[in-house]
Image 1 (cartoon, rainbow, N blue to C red):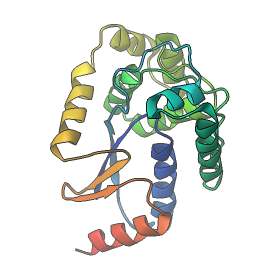
Image 2 (cartoon, rainbow, N blue to C red; image 1 turned 180 degrees about the horizontal axis):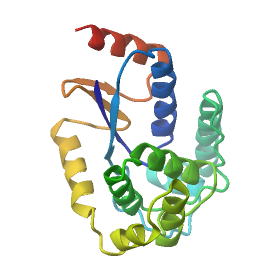
Image 3 (cartoon, rainbow, N blue to C red; image 1 turned 180 degrees about the vertical axis):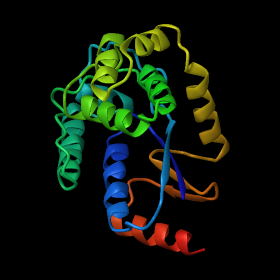
Image 4 (spheres, helix red, strand yellow; image 1 turned 90 degrees about the vertical axis):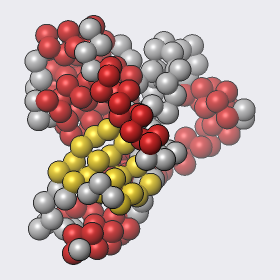
Length: 209
């Protein structure tokens, strides 16, 4: 079974959805699955460096106040904790995720895409790392066991920018409005951080066809 997943490093539902899928797959041990991570940017125009924290960033984006944003994030922290994730919103550094997506494409070439995706999500939501900066991204690549020089070169040369753009265009052509979006065997789409049981039911049904 092939599962393509469009998601963004700065998307909390994408991290939660990743965990839900993983927990569903644990219940389907006989299912052979090949997962491919696809790029999607929630905010392509986000600056690499921002003067705003995540609360003010969200308040500005949605035209609400800071209290609303803090409550939204508190709810998100609770949702994350239910699947064993520890989100540290106070330390989170809002940034542009384009280069993080380039790194995911490089990781795919060396068979470490899933590890890279997990490392980037953890770095952003739990570890307070600046995933828009080259130095931070290279350090994450090293921790995942990738070639440091290749990682830095790829980021400095924008070697995978076309791959990122192509993924985003493909998402639009499929009518993807938001992420995470799970595309199974090139024909079945599941949108959002679906509950574990929904994944189990859907994957079992597709596998039986």
